[in-house]
Image (cartoon, rainbow, N blue to C red; front, side):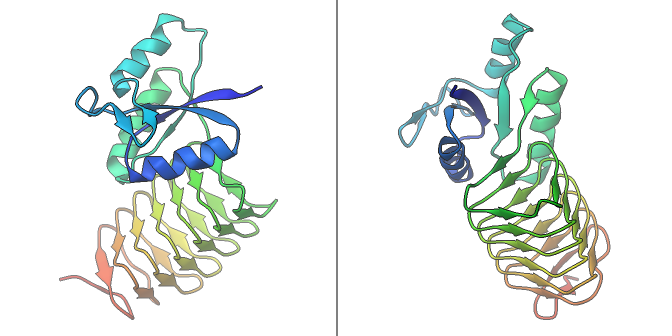
Length: 210
C-alpha cells in the first residue's frame, strides 16, 4: 500500500528528496515555514508550515505521520528533527534506489542518501545526515549526527567526522583522518591532517582559515 510522507522544507534540496521518495513509492506532502507566502514547489502543493503539520498530527495522537526533513542547514535540520520527534512523528530514512549501501553499514533515522552514493562496509552514518549525490563513504567511516556530505565527496577508509559538520562538494579526506564537530571544509579541498572542532578549512591540502 502506498504511504504518505511529509517533507519539511520546500527548496531545491526538497525537490531531490521528493523525487527519491516518489521512486520509493511514497505520496509526497510538502510543509514549509514560508507558507502561505509560498504555496507550491514545482508541481507539488505546500500544505502548511511545520507548525501546521504538528497541529495536524495532534488532532489524532494515534496518527503517527512519516516525515523527513529536507533542509540543508545543519542547525535548522537538527532543530526541526528534534521538534518533530518530540511531537510523535515517525522520522524515516530515505535511500535512493541507485545508492549502494553495504549490508554491514548502519544509517540512523532521518538521514537521506542520494543517487549514486556509496556507503561501504562497517561505516556508520548518524541521525539526520545528508550523504549527497555520488558521495563515497569508504569502509569503517563514522559520520556523526546532522552532518552534510556534499556531492562527489570521497572519504577514504576509517575517516571520522563530528556532528553538524559540512564537507564541501568534491572534497577528499585521506584515510583515518578526523574532522571535528561544527567544521566546514571548503569545496574541492583535500584533507590530509586532522581538523579540530569549530574550524573552517579549505585548499589542497586543507588548512584552517585564519
